[in-house]
Amino acid sequence: MLYREAGQFKASYEADQQIFPILQDRIGVMLLIGFFALAVPLFADQYWLKAILIPVLIFSLAAIGLNILTGYAGQLSLGSAAFMAVGAFGAYNFMLRIDGMPFLVAILLGGLCAALVGVMFGLPSLRIKGFYLAVATLAAQFFIVWALVKIEWFSNYSSSGVITAQQIEILGFAFEGPQSKYLLTLFVVVMMALAAKNMVRSTTGRSWMAVRDMDVAAEVIGIRLMRTKLTAFAVSSFYCGVAGALYAYTYIGTVEPEGFNLDLSFKILFMIIIGGVGSIMGSFLGAAFIVLLPIALDVFVPMLLGDLVSSSFVSNLQLIVFGGLIVFFLIVEPHGLARLWQIGKEKLRLWPFPH
Amino acid sequence: MAREIGDVILKMEGISLSFGGVKALTNISFDVREHEIRSIIGPNGAGKSSMLNVINGVYHPQEGQVTFRGEVRRDMEPHKAAKQGIARTFQNIALFKGMSVIDNIMTGRNLKMKCNVFHHALHWGKARAEEIEHRKKVEEVIDFLEIQNIRKTPVGRLPYGLQKRVELGRALAAEPSMMLLDEPMAGMNVEEKQDMCRFILDVNDQFGTTIVLIEHDMGVVMDISDRVVVLDYGKKIGDGEPDEVKNNPDVIAAYLGTSH
Image (cartoon, rainbow over all chains, first blue to last red; front, top):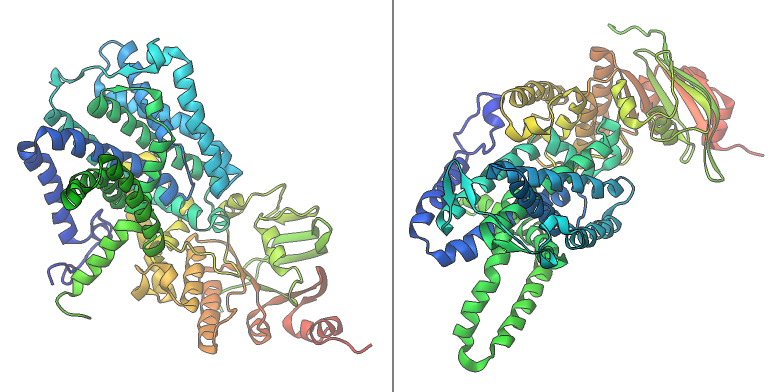
């Protein structure tokens, strides 16, 4: 009863093509953003901000990046973490080498570096598809991490490529505490998520999906396969790059190339599989799920089983539950949490009536 | 009738196409005149779909030349054919399954859209105006095909006949001057076929679109075509007006078999 669009008549195509066409969705999104921007920084403690909310936001951004490439444009990639690394090291070098480099510009430039590298490693996608492409992007994963360690200039000749993110300062305001870093991250992520939503609902996104669903038909309509795929690689890597820069600057602080390994790439892939392939909101849900699950298991398993089990058992159990859930999702709901939310919404439209 | 058949706009001369050792088309020549409905018929495996693929650049013939509006083609790519105003539908529906009807038809207009990815990311001003302008055109197509009630349905959920209609809509949205229809009525019941025939005739009549049609239903072909090409085993065995083709002994032999 509460969630239904009955009575919301659209009198113009503009109204019909809004980013959130249903009033309840608009209110919901406003409330969510308001809650996370105003209420959370006031009440959440350091641990929540630093260990949960900031990483969830950053991984959401990376997941959006991968979702653009895999979920919307249909190009499988296992190199997301490497593109994050390019963004992190790119932003670091811009901050380091250019005096008075504004922070936001530096992370955008870091993202652009990642986009360039992404386009380079996206070139094989013009020839190969599916799993074979995934293997080609695997090359990006290993090569980039290797290059960042090997070429010491990238890490300013520090040992084993470790970099320490500089102090963030915007217009004279220093972002030191977790609160201000959280708000900065939230701002960047929300802006970029809205931009992603805009892209996928316009010609760019339609071309991506057309190439994903039926590439021959897309070409016959006049969609340039090469340009469309490379745009997807560029935008996707840009998102991953910015996520990587934020990862270094607002989350970890000190990063090394090895931190952006294949494990992280897989983690981001799991986020979009569990959250929902081809859904912006799913990227957030998936990131939250994957970040929160280990923490929740850490808390609840000892609580339930008490002293019966050792901590090493708990950490193994985590992996088992994790793997089990991924298999479960692949079988039961290949469209992930976002699809469950969609089904829930359809039920809500009718509630309390069955039909 | 408003339409008047004009000059030859597409000329196929001596087209031969083979895949490895398999000869799909052998030395085929025919032409298509402006505003006409030109059918290509023939038994299964005769090379009809290959012929359409040659016309819009998916396949490149080893021999022969294609002249479209006075321009001889060399190694045509499909998107260039689209730019020249050639749209097509497919034998097996080739819609974008994950998208709604509106989005599918909107993709048909992508060549007419000028905004780039940065405009789209902001979705403000120019990009928004463009989206609305093209939405109007898409709604005209939706009205024309009488599919208003399913405009927001994901195409994967639609029944077969409607999917075929949406695919026609996607081709129409590009406002093509020539449309290639690959078995638009395959697998339809009588009512659906009648609807589809009416749409094809209306498109031809109202927009003056030249239509190249592949179809197996002889009743339909003989009724709506201006001229018919008959292929068999990659060779042309007949060409002319429906009545002429109907009485061609080679064509009868190909369809009914001959006694030896």
